[in-house]
Image (tube, rainbow over all chains, first blue to last red; front, side, top):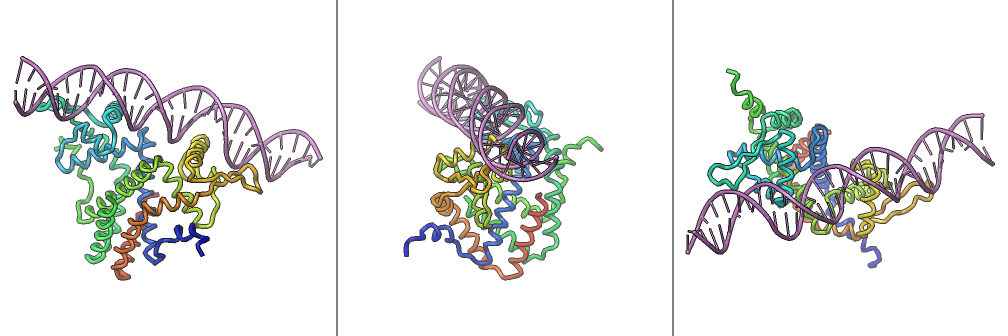
Length: 157
Length: 157
DNA sequence: ACAAGTATCTTGCTGAGCGAGATAATAGAG
DNA sequence: CTCTATTATCTCGCTCAGCAAGATACTTGT
């Protein structure tokens, strides 16, 4: 009876007990996004601005300088959008533009310390909570969480 | 010596082995966001449109009707933005507007079956991959993953 | 020294989302 | 039953993030 094709498509997933966790992961991803959007709005920023600051801090932690071009590429913006983004962040005092001394076409972006502190004040409690949860786990449980997240990371490319 | 205050703020987190997993979770959240943005762009939609379709499908799965107002509230849009969003989705054929018969002020939004199928074709493989990963776990490992995600969900409000 | 290449910025535009208010339908008081 | 308050959606005019195209400034290879 091919008269319910829609239903077949809707109910395609294997409805095992795994699906609960899959939906949980999605809910967490959505909520983390909301959390960071709220942070943006409270500080008069846009979601992209927060993503930019996070990208900049990640690079800084890895010991890499970030140029305007790098930043734009990481966020999927074109050059005009990148310039506007950096203008915005600079005007708000969250970053500084520094002309590269060796290649003077380049502009490296440095995050202001106060922006870092602001980020910690908002995301710190969440990170602490996560660390608390994980400290209660033994090595096999940690491996399970790590393995699941690592697997999802590879799958989501 | 208080001449390195910036550093103190930057390195505030307890640098235990938990931090690796915290960063993993954030990376997964970001990548899932990117995945859904790519889906949006490939189909000529905006991230908000995808979020709207997901919200609509979630409600439908829970057996609830979604009105324009509900949808806007769920996405944090005002009424003008909501109207524009539904216009866009309707123009693209992803949803239908249906005037509620009992309260004729209300407009309920119905997702078109083809939009659902389109979503599955993109997110299905990812979901399958997640289910595969989880099927290899025993009950205690599943409980660990579930507990961590549930805890983060409560913390991220 | 000069052509080709690379990094950023400028200009002009499109469109998502907002604030304010219009329109239409329901609910409650008398 | 009618008049007013409330609720749900839509319309209008605007702001601003991001795009496409091209200008500008610097570097590199010949």
